[in-house]
Amino acid sequence: MTIQKEKEQMSWWHARVSFETAQPFVADDFAALIDALADHGASGSVSRSFREGGVVLTVEASTPLEATTSALNIITNALNSILGALTITGLDVMSEEALDAELATPVFPDVVGYAEIAELAGVSRQRARQFAQIEGFPVPVIETAQGPLMSKHAVERWLETRSKSSGRPRKLLQAL
View 1: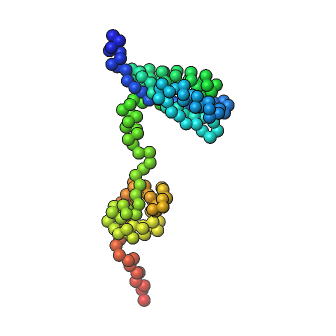
View 2: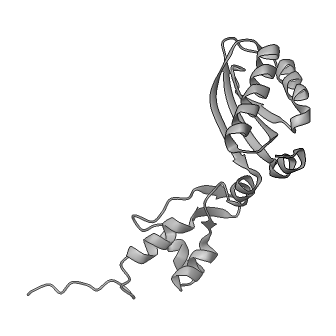
């Protein structure tokens, strides 16, 4: 195979590596780690304890296995030289296409307020607000200054299964 063909088969891969250190490290050490990985477009985060962290970087490789090996070698060498002894606790490698698809997927569920609930249920906003008083109505997942927001899926499910009797509840006739 020629060098040109090998180059054509190379692609960019994105790796997420989680790690844990035996001893806490300082913020400057983590900054030095990110600087050392600058050629790989690295970014990262650390835990409050400064014993755990994660780094995201890019590598060029022909296959997912090659990308995994390359990312693991790059990150392990950089981590060991800057932070000392550590344990890799997670490794995830994905193609650019897979990363784009993941980033296009919302991290949180679709949410709805009373105006959207009224539209979904075919009722007034006032009636939609009354739904919150009914047992079994979904609890808010987010509270904002504009009002509570509920999971759209949970509200749709509740609307499908709720009792839809209209009007005031009938009074029971008492036998005389």
